Image 1 (cartoon, rainbow, N blue to C red):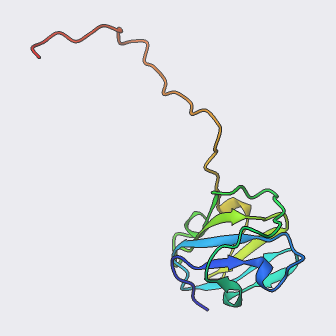
Image 2: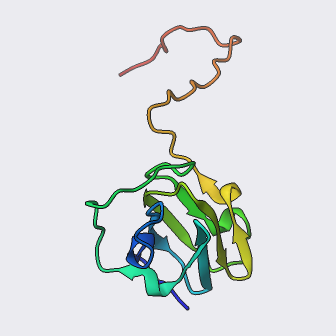
Length: 133
């Protein structure tokens, strides 16, 4: 079962009483097997043509905009990457290329958090440079 870039998997398609996990394929997908969420197995049968935001979705540890990246678990993979579009309260794992991708394969975009500033080297004085402009 292969997925392609742009495919949207919606748990509500076959399981309307679920948390409503919605994922969009960002890259990869040739080795996709299934997604486990709320005790359901989501496969290519759960691909929908577009995102329907009118349904209730239960948020959990997955934040909208967070990515699930297979390359973080195994560099020797098809490189499946999903972006979380909604839901996710019952998320368990993604199975792809024989790998199990859980919360360790996630990259949080950290919306609303301050970036840490680079360390300043105290050895260099804070003076303007001299020269011609």
